[in-house]
Length: 153
Image 1: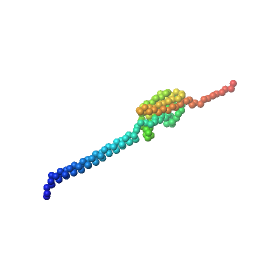
Image 2: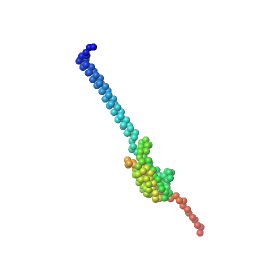
Image 3: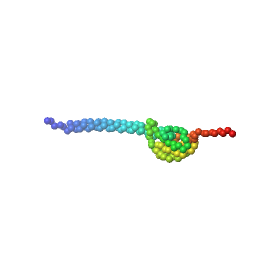
Image 4: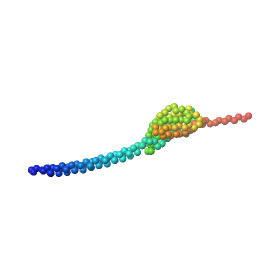
C-alpha cells in the first residue's frame, strides 16, 4: 500500500473544511429563515388574540326577561358583555355605576342587581378593565291603572 503524501492530506482537509463551511452557511440560512417565520407567526397570533374589547353591551332584565321599563319596587338585573373584534367574550369583571337606586349585589362582576330605583329614568354604566364603557337606560314607571270614580249628585 502506498503512503499518502502530506500534500494530499492538506488538500483533503481543505476540501472537508470547505464542505463543512458550506453546510454551516446553509444551516445558518435555514435558522434565519425559521426565525423570520416564527416572528411572523407570533405577530399573526398576537393579532388574532387581541383582547381589547370592541364593545360593551349592557342589558336590563327582570327574572331573565330583557326589558326597558320596570315597575317601582322591582329588583332590576343588569348584565354586561364585552366582545373583541371576533365577537368573543373578553372580560368577566366590571365596575358599575348607577344614576339612581342601590347596587345590592354583583359589584365587580358581569351582573349587578339594583333595588329601590325611584320613578323616572335610570342609567347604569359598566366599565371594563380597559376603560371601555357600556350604558343602558331604563324607565321605572308606575303602571297601576288609574281608577276614576264619578258620583252623580
